[in-house]
Length: 252
Image (cartoon, rainbow, N blue to C red):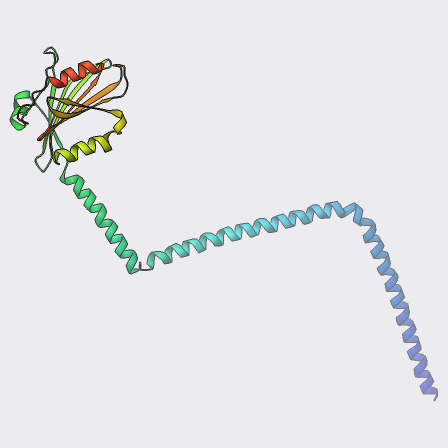
């Protein structure tokens, strides 16, 4: 019995000491808590700044990592795509496009117009030259253009000055007379911009950019064999028609 009471007394002492330790620790905890709370107002702003900097730094690091990862991923995709074979339909479309571009290039190469400076006599041997009557004091420049399908056009520059310009063109027809007239009316100009008339019995079209002679003007004549164009600047309507009427169109 005594031993039992002794044991109970021993445990009572232990519990008492434990209670004291708990109370002491609670007091210490309360003191620390009060100290922390009292310092919040002093250090709270600084802590927010520090935390903000830490947060911003974390975001910056994350952005850098994402950027590096994106570049690596994009490079990998590009490298992989370079090794992936193109589908058959894509290859076929590309083949068609390449053929079309090649055909267009061939068309351009097949029909270039070679420009050759010639004398009037040399040009007259190549084409049935029908020139207008232009003052003799002008020294014209004669040019022959020839395509690979042997179609010839003559170009004569009479004068090229700021206040006066006269050029004459004569080309062999590559289409029917009716088709050429249709193109002049519907493609070269709007119908309302053209004045229809006849030059020596042949359908002709006068285009005036303005009523004043300071504008460029053109008159086109369509015969069965040739297409004539007279382009002027510094001449009025009456003078243009007069020059056009001086062209010898007999037998065309």
